Image (tube, rainbow, N blue to C red; front, side, top):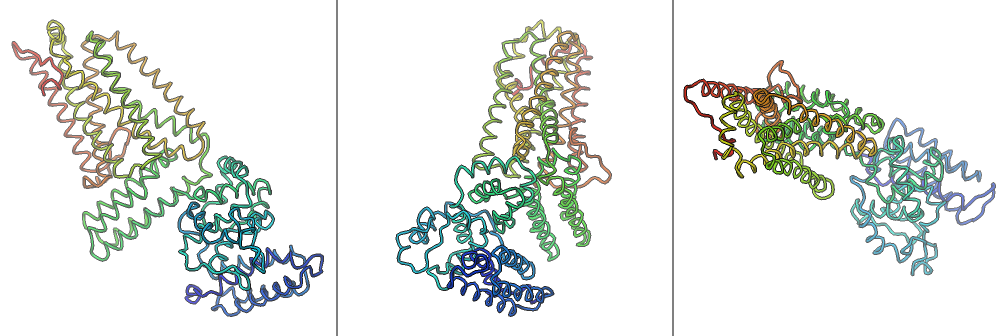
Length: 635
């Protein structure tokens, strides 16, 4: 097997190129068992002999004997002047078997740059092949062998991008087509894809885009650059029909990035980073191991987290927890075997994630449900806070302050729209900045809600509220307090909008835009009903009970947001992770099985209890007076 792996000679790619040439050009030499062109037939015979010699010279391989037999059979059918279809079938089959036995790079490392391809074509190819690829460049007439016309649709259907790449790299003996092996590999791939698009029209490409985006099975069939680079339109036509194949190849030759799978790429990156982290840990470099482990989450897994949450929230939670425990194991200097076992577990979970995230796993129903549940879950949290503030102001008779609250949540929605634009079309949002925004936003909102909840609890006693009313709230809702309510509404809504954007951006890439909008619209409708019911029935609630219930709501949300904030900062690597064995994970309630998040939540709960107890003592004390201002006024 070592000889196979080291077969890095020119024999394999040259033999493959000759086989591709035989498959495409033999029809110009023989027809109906008769020679059409003596020179062409002599060339075909020469090439078949060269293929047999090069295959015979390859290093030993279990498949070599079969390849040699195939090359001998190909020589025989050419000598017998067999039909072009028979020769093409044998040549293509032998070429495919050759690459299986002696693998060589079949695809570019990244999507080819077509703009770069256009520049290179103008500089190196247009003088012979013409700017439009029709083979009629200014120097074409000087050549004894006419240059290839890339606009020839019959010929183009038989050529893969890989075949063009091989010709660019090695040239064609006996012709003016020289080798461009001196060009970097990515430049040769750019040229290959650019030249491969001439035979297909822009109109066909537009139709191909529609077919590509609407056919999930097609996207599964051509699931990466390797599949695209080695595919000929003729082979694809046998699967989906010639017209559709031409259209799809017209689109993909112009937009090879369309076949890239961000999900698979992200998970591959996560696997690679974990492997590097384990290797660093084995060598004693714990610091680098921790940095690589964090990168595995932020750069590898975090980008696919929104889509995975929409498809399988339970699996997402398992992976998120396992990655946190892996980082904790590194911090705690666990044994190498323990760390290696955790990597194995994560790789198994990634296998499950790839299955769940595969293109054919997406459906209209899953997109609708994902969009609906995500918006309902995130929106409900913000809705509870904003509606409580609106109801409070109405109860207090201070409707002139309502515009500040409305301005806060509307401003958050506008900011969310701008965030979508920036994240989608400009710079993207890195995993770390996402988690930092969520983390600090949650903690800030938790602290604010803690103070608001304690303040509302102080107003729950009837005598306190009556005193509050008698003083006509002269200082209770000053301009400073109004801006405080604006800021609170903005923060709590923007935090939820920000997280929803990440989920929706992931769902949008699945192509089920209509179902996504339907799910979002349904969630908005339900949230609207909930808001109406809360505002309607809060009017009939006795003032003391209203403040009491609102205070407990704020207290509960304080604890929830505190847990979510700590968890987000842990994922960003700002706070260490100490797993809590046997702990629960209830993401919606902000409960995560780590000592840090649970400690902060308990601290918030203790602060709530202490604040409520102080309120009761203050009310019970003879001659006590209430602190009738919102917390912001104290500043």
